[in-house]
Image (cartoon, rainbow, N blue to C red; front, side, top):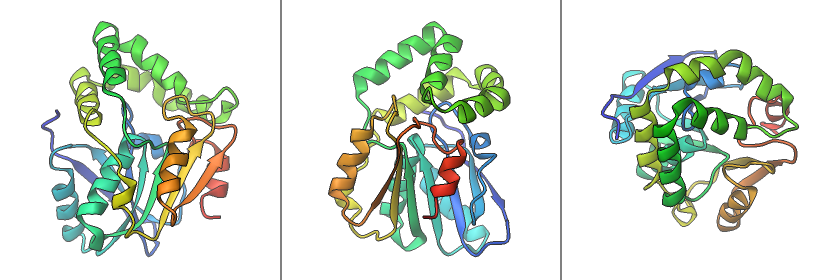
Length: 232
């Protein structure tokens, strides 16, 4: 488990609400570079899995931010919902992307073995699996802007720390009943978190809205269709 302190960056974009953006495994805040939503952004630039909630609370206090919305993608959705459950008075909206209740420990163990055997090969496959064969737009942007730097810069110890966190992370829909503003965004062609996972969470969260994307995969927000449908 990573011992690094969480790092945040607040970007005032002139809006009344602030959105905390939390990326998925093997990515970082740069994956949100093209996202243009009507919020100020609070980027989680580095994760401390053990101290994330308190460190985020400290940042909100320092910047005099009363409430925030969350944009939690994949692994980021676990961190977002955990914060929300422990700090409902600080939480406004929950946007959960490419989410599932939990990841199987055996699958995570296999990823860890592949990672230790050949990091570049393991990550290359993972990044390819993040996009559907229809999403040339998202996959093309990722390949051009992030792929090479991610393959070089992602440290083994941080990647393993993320897998260790996911081995115990869980979303429990029955505990989220007190939140009225929840949207779940999911690609029907997601190969990492199958669409059925989002459907099961939605079944238990009657107040949530499920927005599906028939031709998109795990990383759906790099496609312009996502932004066009985000506020509908």
